[in-house]
Length: 248
Image (cartoon, rainbow, N blue to C red; front, side, top):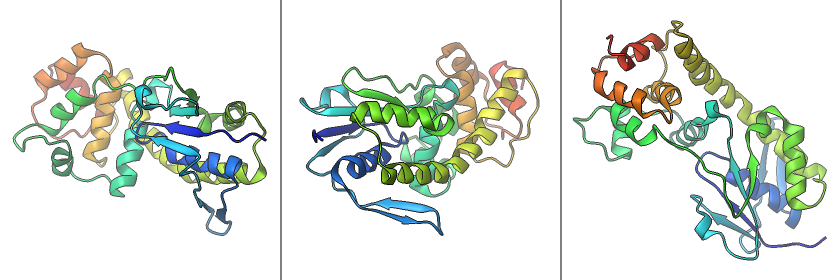
């Protein structure tokens, strides 16, 4: 087996560290602690010399003569799942809107929803021309195909230890995907269908992601929300619809 130098390049929340560990286990025999009782797995990463990190992703920073891989989410409804994961894992729970405003250097007098929407409205995670682009949607929805893609990238079958590590990590993250689906994806679908859904108990950040998922890439909708939002609390998805359409 030929061991090349590897590179993992990723944007926050797209499981770059998972791929670093996977390569380390598969290619460089890194040890992995698997606690079957707690259903957890932690790798002893041994990739400092053989696996390079580029984070956040930039094609221009990919070194020459490496096998590079970049994780991304393809489905439009999952566009903001990486941000959801990143902040949830970073802060342990979603902080209040003032903490987010400080994080993004937004003035106290400015609207949390409007100012971050201006940043997020056209957010995309582009494919790389320098890397093997691996679709993380499959990690959750089509795990067998995800494994096949990894094997194609690495040029060999995954070892049982590698597969066990990936399966445990997948199972650990599935509840987070389910929460995102219930709170953001399903709410966005209700909004698109103009069906009422109470979202009063969601965090401000989750409500923001519902707005962003609904308007993403559409400046007209974004502009409407910016124009009509009156700083009232958002308690139902139809409040978002009303703000976007100037009916609140």
